[in-house]
Length: 448
Image (cartoon, rainbow, N blue to C red; front, side):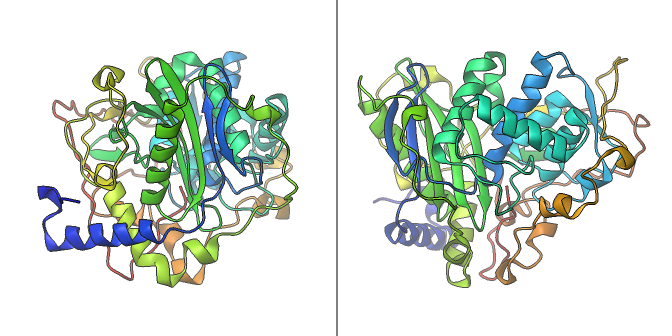
């Protein structure tokens, strides 16, 4: 394989070599699934009904429940939501807003899909249903209606809890339901970057701008779950959903999803029936991947792959690459494709209510009325994914691979309704998110 000019520095060549070794020595594949969005047919699957920790793929269900509340008239996309002390206390990845800061639901959902902040997920849950516990109950009721048979949710962000589980089949079901039931929000899942004031926030999805026709949806990572993704791509008038669970690194996650897209688009007609018809698994508990994913032996390789997968980018603009750019059959994505830099025009967002807003502002119910607040069960819903090998990771505000890439926005503690929106600066040019080379003993990425 010939290295491009961007890979000729000693550091990048070493990282690229490490990525090659990582892929060559990849562990056995975890669950996966490929589904045709329009026909609903399963095109391929591996252990798709086995339980798995979804990590931040959970936020797809959080988004579905929030959009369902909008559809039901309980709030609007412009309704301001309030950051509570409980939400602000969540471990990284997070926006880091102070209690009392308001964010419209529209901006909160964009943050949720791009940065995957755990504090914003809780803010959405508390504002929509009054408490995390009530929102989790609605998540589970909605999952039953969608025939998601392996899923049980205890929080809106996917922070690790042994009782918080799903499956590749269930993640494909909620992904397809989002596209089917809320077609006006389809662009939400393909935003490549956000801009909040001077801060540029890049999407974790390594397929955007790299795999032909990739246009969404969500990644997730904790040590017990491994690196997960639900991805969508469009080619030749067909849209596919790919789910990959338990990959050993972000790069492996991206490469496996690309391989499954290639195979899915090459398959014409047929199928194995809808995901709902797949036989239930005899496995009753999700495996804990912590030892394999977050061991000291694998840490440097994971971080190198994280850096390359989120690296700076070229010539692709907007919310994923336009379909018109890929009228020819997509070529198989190479390893060099997967780590190439990609530029995006950032989507501007702001904090505070929309100018002129005169409607209600939603917030968590007072603690006295929130039966779950402060209880052992409530605390259990936020078991931190912390191990001796990732000490302090939960205090980071961005993945270790992006440290130095993001210019933090300074937000002073503000009381609710006492602040003005932060106006995003006009962005005329495409921007690149550069990753700082992590040290060999750097921390693992925070959960996202």
